[in-house]
Image (cartoon, rainbow, N blue to C red):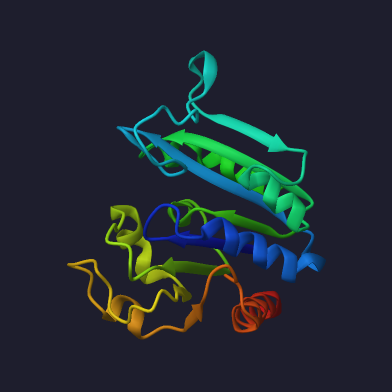
Amino acid sequence: MLVVVGGHARNIGKTSVVAGLIRELRDRRWTALKITQYGNGVCANHTGTAACGCEPAGGEEFALSEEYEAGGTDSGRFLAAGAERSFWLRVPSGELPRAAGMVKKILAQGENAIVESGSVVELVAPDVFLMLLDFSCEDFKASSLRFMDRADGFVVIDRGINAPLWEAVARGMWDGKPRFLVKPPRYVTAEVVDFVRSKISAASAR
């Protein structure tokens, strides 16, 4: 089974959703993967002007590391939540398709995998694809808009704002699909868990 969690912008809670799902569905013995795209002055894992530290040392095309310690890093949070294994893949911005073989090899490490990266849906077909929406955040990644129609449901961050600040995104892109309102620091509710569990069960029955 493959669960994918994406979001329309950086730092809106994707890691918290992944960790929460792992914790609530611990019996699935997850292999977790976080994908970070960096370069062109933008990093999906970093804000600010300083170097993000994601770029591989030694000129390698991609960087892949497996986390062994719970806590601290995002991949460490996945282990702390109960993942069996946890990986972090860094690729140059826009170059994820070139890492398709590596991604699929990681996902094959276990029976159930969960990925923090909406862009990965251009490489694989998830059984469940959740996308986070934060109406208070004006940023909207082009890649997120491209894959938005593939989402099975939306996790909407409750910040007391009923209408999004972003422009040029048709409301119909998210209005006709299941939406789950969550309030930080609780990013995963019983309704979210039940939805994911039901989608997994339906996929297993096929």
